[in-house]
Length: 416
Image (cartoon, rainbow, N blue to C red):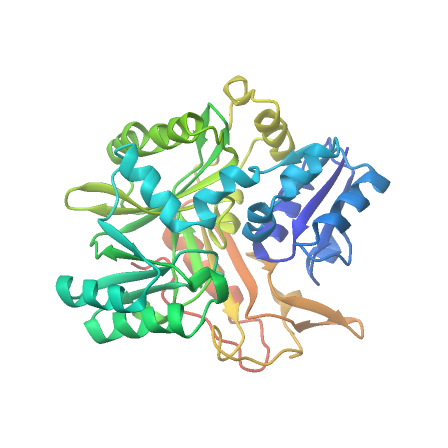
């Protein structure tokens, strides 16, 4: 079977690497791919958002399945276009991907169907938003309504921080059209947990829990990034909490999307906060999270190609999905300056000395027979072990073997 994977980051490398283990998959393309993916798949020079180009490629090369991984092409309707052209595609259609593409839609959905989440208000006028912040005080959370590469959230500890975030988004255009509307939320406290689930429109099967580290620096300090590392399983997500989430959040969300005429098929990501009043939804994503995917898929035993097909054919209830008892840790190595300005083209060395981990490439490119940096997040060094502490130790032992000018990584992934 032939598979085309859309995207070019660490998440896509993890998906390609996992699909390559399937005895049923004998050819994989990845558009656009990256320097590391090129060792496991044929990279295609198409942007992930080039819907017409992807459809044309699929018509010509006839993959048995197209897996659309990133948020942008999902929100733009790539799955719709592929299916309309008679091509099997994995991922939610545009009207379901809106659960991530619009935070205000997600909040209104949760309010309507009584799914626990933070209190909120939505604004397009900065003056009204500032009045709301003055009235409610800080800490408070400001979110760009649309897709902002994981960087559109400000956890403001002061009113001034919140007001600055609102003005940057609405008046300053910091996130383009994605920030023209903002969602202002109640500040919640408690451990964060990421739970990803395969969903076929009706049936939902969760993956092992994980935890992402969004802030750029140790101790959760610095600006929000797309994610500086992740580990699985969460230290806090007990079987009892999982059962509560299934009954109050996971199943109700799938049923709500069905009721709204937006059946969700693909991977649905639940960003949760385990508050003193119980689990609440912080955010939904309409796809595999990054870097949680690198950690979670490292634990998958069942053929991923079979799972994708079960989702597409709405037969998820007929497949058993097995996971190892191991833990996994992914440490992201980023370019100096990320998530703000950073330089590209730095030579990467030491990868041949890595033995205890698998290195997923996020922002790399081939140059003169070697690899150079080509993005903010560059590598995801991912290790598995019987215990989480051992997985963390193995990942960091290999991180220290890899070098590029300006390399930056957090030293506390998995500790909290």
